[in-house]
Amino acid sequence: MTPIAHIETCFPTKFGIPRQAGIVDTPGRIVFETQYRVAEAVRGLEGFDYIWLIWQFSETVRDEWSPTVRPPRLGGNERIGVFATRSPFRPNPVGLSSVKLLKIEQDYQLGPVLYVSGADLMDGTPIYDIKPYLPYADSHPDARSGFATRPAEWLMEVVCPPALLSLLPPDMQQPLLDVLAHDPRPQYQHDPGRIYGMAFSDYEVRFCANDMQITVVDILHV
Image (cartoon, rainbow, N blue to C red; front, top):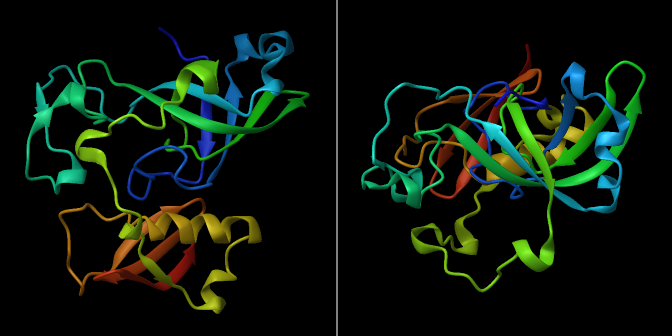
């Protein structure tokens, strides 16, 4: 398979990317590769609120694979079968994400560009295919979620001085707070004295964490 497009997001590195699609309303833009910049290829897609993205874990491509992995959800200490997880370390490094389709714009040079929200993809991730999300077939709200059940109180309190938050463009401020509220740290790291650095678009966000609170200590334009 060859990529049909790539996505532009505010996550230049893996650290800080939401662990699942749709849990944070982070903006994204899907740009088609040259041979697929054809308006007819997305005709009718504007009638759907959500789309499926089939993409490549481009940072984890490797020749070998393991039948078990250590999910962050379990603290990185327990092994689970790879096919019972969404780990990027798979026999075929393929990801699947459902994102909200905000609009489709026709660009003179880029052709149809898809604007989406809620993507859990790193900036520049190759996309293999796009399909419409069908609620009557794709949604199963009563389904069991195995070890991945998450209590609502898991969200962290985020403390960010207004003077620091104002350094970001207005449309990026709430997405940053939401990303931090979901605690981007590896779930096995709990070091209250550590200052973490997270790349977010053109900025480096520095923060510390303890218990259920994350405190932003600096935001630098890079």
